[in-house]
Amino acid sequence: MKILYCDEIKTIVRGLDLLPLIKKGFVAYSEGRSVVPPVGELSFKDPPGDVHIKYGYITGDEYYVIKIASGFWNNEQLGISNGQGMMLLFKQQTGQCEAILLDDAYLTDVRTAVAGAICAELFANEVNCIGVLGTGLQARMQVQYLKNITSCHKVLVWGRNRKKMEIYQKDMARLGFQVDLSSAPKEVAKECNLIITTTASTVPLLSSINIQPGTHITAMGSDTLTKQELEVDILSMADLVVADSIAQCKERGEIFHGLTSGSITKDEIVELGSILNGSQAGRSSPDQITVADLTGVAVQDIQIAAAVHKAYKEKNK
Amino acid sequence: MKILYCDEIKTIVRGLDLLPLIKKGFVAYSEGRSVVPPVGELSFKDPPGDVHIKYGYITGDEYYVIKIASGFWNNEQLGISNGQGMMLLFKQQTGQCEAILLDDAYLTDVRTAVAGAICAELFANEVNCIGVLGTGLQARMQVQYLKNITSCHKVLVWGRNRKKMEIYQKDMARLGFQVDLSSAPKEVAKECNLIITTTASTVPLLSSINIQPGTHITAMGSDTLTKQELEVDILSMADLVVADSIAQCKERGEIFHGLTSGSITKDEIVELGSILNGSQAGRSSPDQITVADLTGVAVQDIQIAAAVHKAYKEKNK
Image (cartoon, rainbow over all chains, first blue to last red; front, side, top):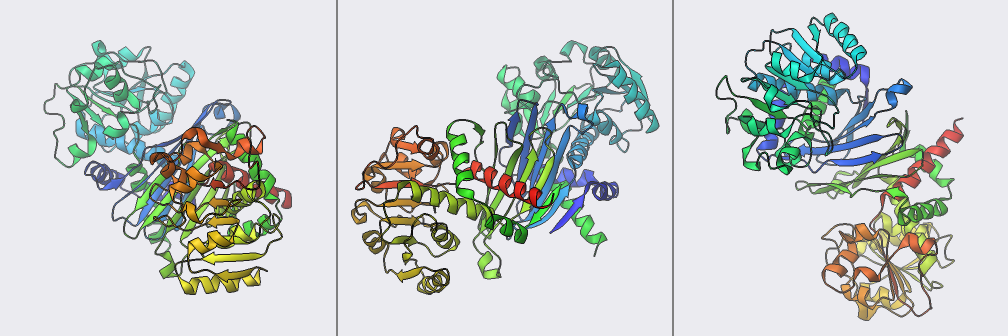
């Protein structure tokens, strides 16, 4: 059994072409070729924290994967990363553990950013300006992973905290992005035709009246019952509402709020893998408004963990 | 973060007094001082295998624990242990991983045997002969862990495979037990007033007509929907039916079959921790027939993992 540490994992990830792999995962999921039980959850009150256990396998693969990822929101004050976690690979033939990837939640961040890039590639028009809500890690990684998708390096960011916006601006400038700061989410909506929402907000930040025709929104901040970044009227207005997992989006995220409020029906939701395999249509005209709701599916973890492990084995043959 | 391997874990366990620790875990569970979500499960068809993810924490403790344990029934043919697994300790304050116990499911075996010993101590009369159904690992460990509970070293064993019974007899003789072989489960019931059932049977092996007054049965083989070792009439006849976790036994194990068949009602089931803390009565007369149904609760994993880790830290201060 191999234990891979974070530095090694980061080096390996740099050499991987992840988009096709994660796409394959979504397709396997939507075609019913994967087993992905409901997410395991553990909550803590003092200090506040959430643990998510995502696990499953693609039928016929070599491994099954268990991913443990947590967010403890007070860690920042202690100088420790809020996100913690690891991915474990076990042989489907015997249950033996093959590798432990001590990634400190890094692979979750990457596969989430890759899913965002897949959505931007599929659904966004030619990007005039990348709109970002939030100034955290995903606000950075989602934009970085767009580098191969769009040549647009203009970003308009909004965050609750001015100082954090300024740090974001500086950090992203170093990565080649020209970032302007925004005073309100609706300003982002007016200026940008690709919007990525990455906050942990429990109050909607964007409303349908602000969204321009032709906009694509990838909402990835909300992954629980209580979090919500979009007014449900955005979902009812949208020409296309995409879920990474319909089963999961019924239980959490933006679509959960849309369904419980009656703003959309289950039949209006299309699964990402079904668009990727061509069985369902994506954006059909430049004027359409499209929304992708990403809650994070274990197939993404399975694919990235297997890819890192495979590359490690090849490197150390 | 520390990684402990199996040999080291076994050495540490030899020095631990586990009964009081596991009792405390059951009491915390029954008193609602623990958070134990439903068991995560993953099934494989070819080759057949089950993975159980048990996780949770005791409020106010230092760690939360995730346990991964699998059974792949064809492993034996490959010379690999059917049981595989590990326990992971994470800080409740930050979510950081503190230790990985690569125990190959050994700690699950121990905490299961300890739960059996707790039940024997609480519910069995003076033991005339220890009856065992099954010849596998738990058939051995359950008996070994009775060494401090009863001075009786007489065992009557039944298993489907004669050869395995003979190996069991030899192995247990080396550990100081005088083992006789039985040709049928009902013979075990007639001769023994403490019976431990440890098989993966999906067909009931014991019926009420065979059980003698004063018998205690610990049923620990059935931990899924399909497995069953006791006819439900044993539960309706019993004076006391104990569950390690009522919530869990409603979903799996012997009590699940008793409830779905209507042989017993929920009100007739007493939780182990409620007897241990004195809030509910255990056996009240020598003639009573008592049954304990053990499906394995995450508090046992939490307690044993924390104890092993604490002992390791003290040893390596």
